Length: 305
Image 1: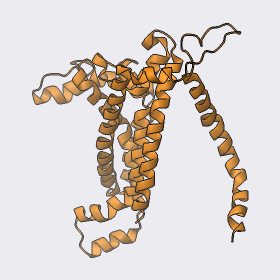
Image 2 (image 1 turned 60 degrees about the vertical axis):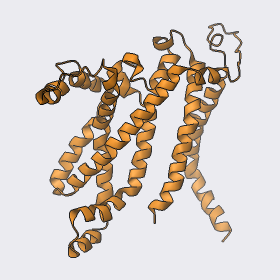
Image 3 (image 1 turned 120 degrees about the horizontal axis):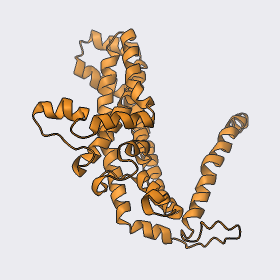
Image 4 (image 1 turned 180 degrees about the vertical axis):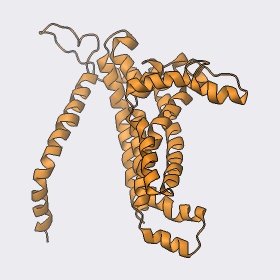
């Protein structure tokens, strides 16, 4: 018995080696270089001379980042963006998935494909689409929703109160269909006898959703939450298409990755401060990874009960 796990491991090792090699090459090595870069002096590490000497400043870049008010603003905006995306996308996607699940299979496939299209959109197409959607008085959102209800048009991209809602709306538009497709796959995986028993017992629609459909997608909802958190923290293309790499008025739409981009390249800080950008990334990554680990560690066993 004791030799069985070892024998299984020996058989699985050749299959694991390619993954482990890619993991080391694409994650461990860049992480090591990032830590080394974060400890360097940003003013002396980019000389073009082949004989240049790298000067290390210890934790100075981390201390500078912690005391940077703009970093705090970007971190706060990112948390708002992630939270807003979660509370909008997951319930809406579940409702769409339930609606699709009730349709005949032919219409279900066609509509599911249509919902999937926004998630496949290229950043260039997104920028044009959302320019037409949000921009000024003539934007589609003002013309077809805001003004017809008798309200004054909103300058979505210039008003600090509406920049963050614009980013969240874009995230909802892009990912709701993809998440709905995930939920639909989970619903189709529920054994059919559950629905047969519910029909025989005369179970109402709300009870059917609460007792059968919600438990059926619970594990997948956990995966979706993790996916949206990671995407929100690492989000760049969405904010870039709307704000062009800036944080908008009063940095109301400045996200963490956008600020890292600004610091790393001249468009933001006016110089290549790659050590400062690396320090920002390394400060945030452990907290995000630790939070997601705790969520997976605590919630998954409960979902199996």
